[in-house]
Amino acid sequence: MEMNGLYLVIASALILVIAYRLYGSFVAAKVLTVNQYRTTPAVAINDGVDYVPTNKWVTFGQHFAAIAGAGPLVGPVIATQFGYLPGVLWILIGSVLAGAVHDFVLLFASVRYNGKSIADIAKSEISSVAGMGTLLATLFLLIITMAGMAAVVANSLENSPWGFFTVSATIPIAVFIGVYLRWIRPGKIREATVIGVALIMAAVVYGPNIAHSSLAPYFTWDRKSIQIMLAVYSFFAAALPVWLLLAPRGYLSTYMKVGTIGALALGIILVMPVLSQMVGEDLMHRPGGAVSLAVGMAHIFSKIPNMDHLMSYWYHFCIMFEALFILTLIDTGTRVSRYMVQELLGMAWPQTLCMGNYDSMFLHCHHHCYG
Image 1 (cartoon, rainbow, N blue to C red):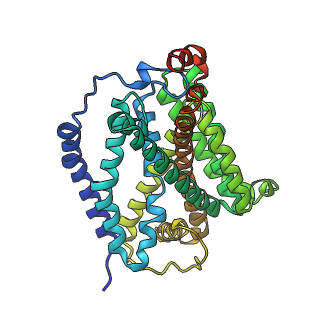
Image 2: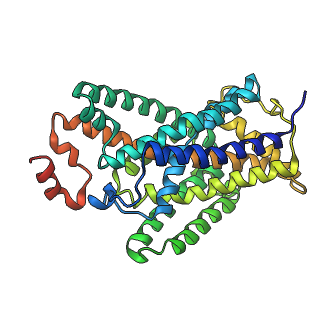
Image 3: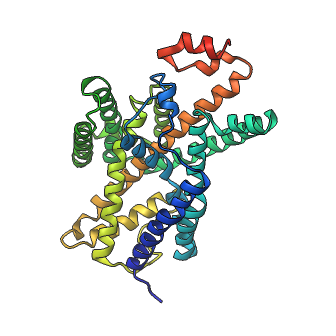
């Protein structure tokens, strides 16, 4: 029995919208009693590094990019080998009843507890033993997650000069936008958005030219080299002020993600593909579902009228898109890991808790670390 993919798109959209409007509102109003007038830690502390008052849309873009992450790429997509129903139920039920609520509650709790981590909250509300156990368990899970996501990104960008160039270009673009909003045109979020999105789109469009130019060897790397580069990049993303790289890169990449997903939904409406587990390419030894998803997206895009000759183009575009998507999860996860390592070391050396807060290092450390 065959099934049209359009049915899944419509049903999924309705379920998510209704769940957000009804169940999400219930959790926000009745369970957590969200109060938009409470002062947030970013305003109360505002150290210029980790606590920085930020435009709500930039904050939303960063959180969306980091929280959405690569879950669907390395989980439900792989589950399609057992049929489409397990993956669909995984995404819909898991997002509505588990993932979305989990992320919302933890973010809310952290804001209410002055930006503290879940380990610090467990320590203050339960016991020191519970805090230490939560810290070690969370840090272990983060390390496993970052390693797995790095493998997916490296696999996607391996020997792909187009993808590597475009993803790499988002880093200096994000730094420029961060400086633009901080010093050149503070508060001009619309200007920065237009400039940033235009630059990223230029990098996407120019990417294929790089792949066929004399510059291609400089952007062609094997998997192990890319994994090392990811570790170096993540270190700087975790150590630099959040407004300089992490937040603007996540915010700008969100436009690419939302735009691509919107285009994919529109493509499904136009093409109305029949669901199939056959992707037409050997995907053995490819970790995660990123490559499988890229083949499926490329198949849908190439079926749009007058685009049947662009199958290879769409495949490489989707690979680049997925790497861009996952990279935000890696740099944000690394920054969270940095906080946890500081908390762990701070138990023996309190000054470690203040590392990174350059703008108020001496006053902050004296007050919080020495009493």
